[in-house]
Image 1 (cartoon, rainbow, N blue to C red):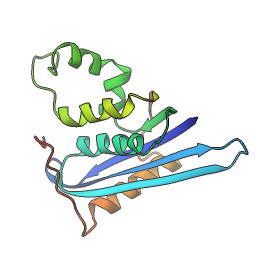
Image 2: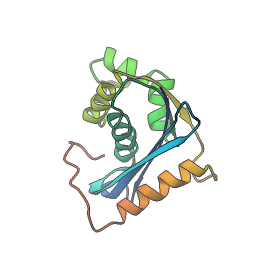
Image 3: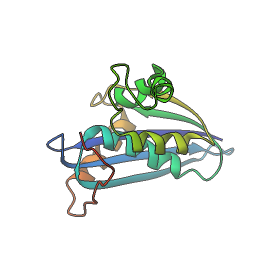
Image 4: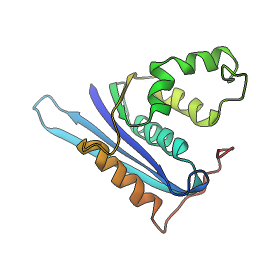
Length: 160
């Protein structure tokens, strides 16, 4: 099954302000019908990068069977981590960067890698705030969640 996952993250007062993520999953069935699902949530104190990661994680975790997934994101942090093979280096260096520093958001990267395991995933970067309909939709989901009165705790470790 071929799926497209559009994602975006937002943070107010980055780092460590309220933030949110938005994700839109799209699938076209054998009859040509488009099926869509939207996901979003807001957090009390977080960073933009954490929300960018959460959008991809939640979208992939929502899939119930193995899929070919095209992840479309305006986050170079997320897309370059795979397209520039940063993740491979981090794994090889025991979650250390090329500068020998600990990789930020390690627990989210590990969760993302686990969510990817049953899927064939490729990452595509799009310019944010450039009129791409699904990216704009994800941005709206993320910012609406960040501005919501219902905010979760981001308890995943370092926020910066």
